[in-house]
Length: 394
Image (cartoon, rainbow, N blue to C red; front, side, top):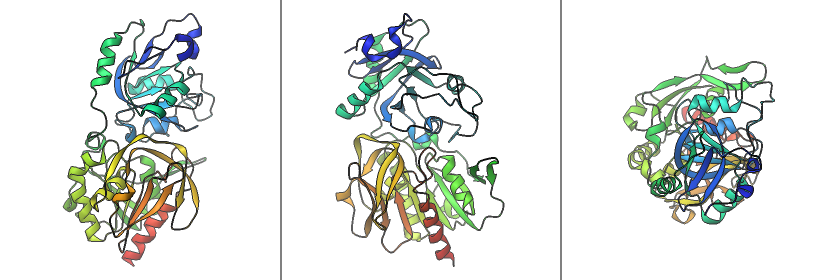
């Protein structure tokens, strides 16, 4: 169905003609105004509840194949800058927002968000009733959709509906190969600090090999900050490729798509990493594939967890932390085998948020302790990983 203009877009009360539409696979149409690049983009429509950090989210490779609906109404107010970038490659497929983008009002801004969207070729739509769309997703699950931006306001709705309906969806899709690096590289940049920006690690005390399934730069910065030389290898790296760098620890990165699909080539490698007893830490997709490697299962979630306000309980300490999350698949608790302990649990819906392998220096979490965006409650997990590495090598 097509919603009435007065209901689906705040700016359509004016006399301007709609220059963009969001069309879902069931034929639902939301009208609005185009932002960013002109054209069409297809993907899974999700919603993100973060109040800040839209630039980091839009450049997070874990959002590959997804059209992000921001529930916060003021996206674009702080413009864009050249520092809050999580990747220069493939990330979010599109952007859906409520209010029109305003002029930036932040001392770090180097320009308006719309200019940055155009420079990245990212297509978006403003003026959508994001509360209505979020309610739709919560009730019916994350749908396939197409954002079309045309300056003349002319759209072939039946064709766009067919394009959305025929998109295969994220289940069964391996996107890690698309967002991963193609060759190994070294990372030395450390975390951002007020007045000095990013630093550089020049005297590392340990060597971490990070397997790039779609890694965020701030994860690598956190590792470098804690005294690590970081070597990043492609998602398709073999165990021998990893071991050729003589790592003190192995990191399994976040990333997009279905863990079972990426796991077809990644799980055997991860199994060898576990068997080697080299300290190993996984985040998000890395967490899910670690679970697959030890015999657990994953499943597609109804709507996923995306936002920087997700409460999680650390079952090993009893503490509750507010976390940043971005995932549409989850490890099923009933599939966890003997020898695997659940370490973290969501206080929203109770799903598994972390695990560790009994008797081995191997653990993982579903969420993002590096934040960017989000709170830094979970930064301790990087220190926990480094402690495992140092104890192993003592």
